[in-house]
Length: 397
Image (cartoon, rainbow, N blue to C red; front, side, top):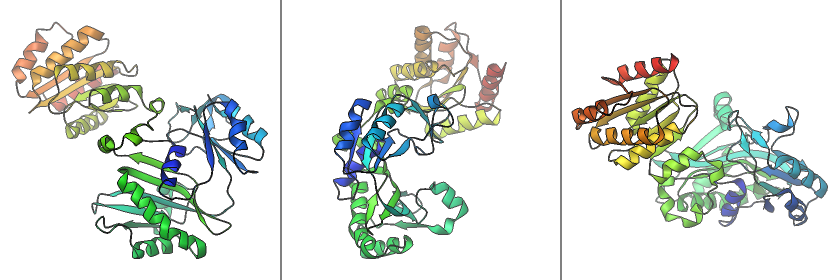
């Protein structure tokens, strides 16, 4: 689960991280009052969407020459003017895709005198099975670009969870970021505080880009991106309250109600599969034969008829879907349950696109018989390769 920048900063501030004063707003009428609460005279007006690259983004309604989604303002009047221009419009960044995201909230923040911009993040390094800091002196840039062009400027430092962030860790990170004086002293409290927040709140990612050294020599968290492990949210009611469903795909929200693992993609062949590995293989083979999957959907090993019906309805609700592939290898999951769920869904929502069904495993003959006797216009497949060829051909024809 992702949260907005202003929410992330409020959370990190609770752990002692240095952040600027700021006020979230949800309408342009709130802009003047928000700016008046800040020291000024420099303000920053920040679009709040779940995507990076906001500063370099463009508002589709304002044309190519429009300013980005993060703007400096030197007066309260400028804050209000920017707020009226940004709220309600669609911001397109390299992470939103061409459709962009509508800006429904802004963060009005006090400006900062920046001396240097640094990069810092915390994540789980699965190669060593530990949380790890990733830091670089090249802040304000995409870390992928830094990794590709100047990998020597990135340090990854795994942290022993039994001891937490020690003096040696702080020293190594500070050396990598070339921190001196007040900034180096700030690091002694900031790095352990960020690690504590990461662990206690079950974060999947904590990214500060940039972490700045101000002209007065101190550190400040200038931006913050936080993502949480969805499997641990049951432990954090306070975090769940931060969820903004307007930033999420409606189909993914619906899928979560039925405990379905669903991710919307950009293709036109809907997939319903049991098992994450088989789902990945199904998407790969669709691409192999020249088409693109419209989703990742794993119904799980023990799905009920109702769950399968819900999964099928979610797929058919996507207007970009021009064909559907159901690929089930029945172990715990029974093929007859899948067949009954598919039929129930088709009878309820109709079938306007080609449907290929490949069933194998537990109760496969019963499942095939149920589909054969249903009267539905379903294309049967013998194996995964056959199924992929048939659905791609059906869609392309």
